[in-house]
Length: 72
Image (cartoon, rainbow, N blue to C red; front, side, top):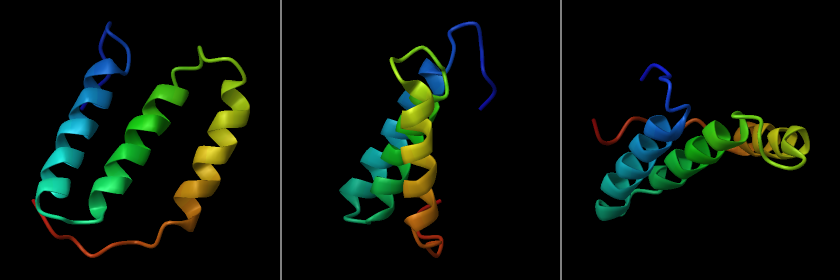
């Protein structure tokens, strides 16, 4: 989803919607979508200490195993 004048907000909302679908299917992949939403928000660069937060998010993403595709 491309960025718009609204910033990352539409992308963040889309991540939460996708997470809800995975959660409804009791699929742990919902956590990955929440993490992606957090990453999008931090990458906007307007939070206090956002660079530190970005490091934490990137390190967390590295810890996540690559899941097999489940929902489409």
